Image 1: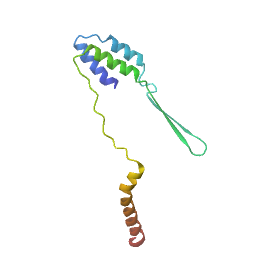
Image 2 (image 1 turned 135 degrees about the horizontal axis):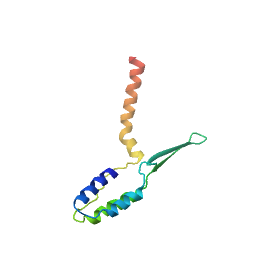
Image 3 (image 1 turned 60 degrees about the vertical axis):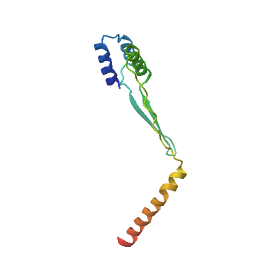
Image 4 (image 1 turned 180 degrees about the vertical axis):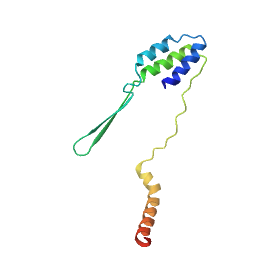
Length: 116
């Protein structure tokens, strides 16, 4: 992400616009590779495993984007439309795919027991 923001920064700089706010936001991000993506895995008694995902803070990147938007107001940045995700309840998925799974299981059982 910072590579793309850096490219945008260079384009804005070549237009002669002030990029000091972007540079301040980038400096506040610090070393973006230090602990940028770290996973802690803990297994407790009884086999329960907990995964904790650590990422670099996103606030400096948002500040950098806003800084670029402020100095190039003629560029309209829009949000992509939300995707229409169909989150089906488990019952509906079982109704749709249950018969297929049952047929595949029956055919597999027949092949294993009668053909092989």
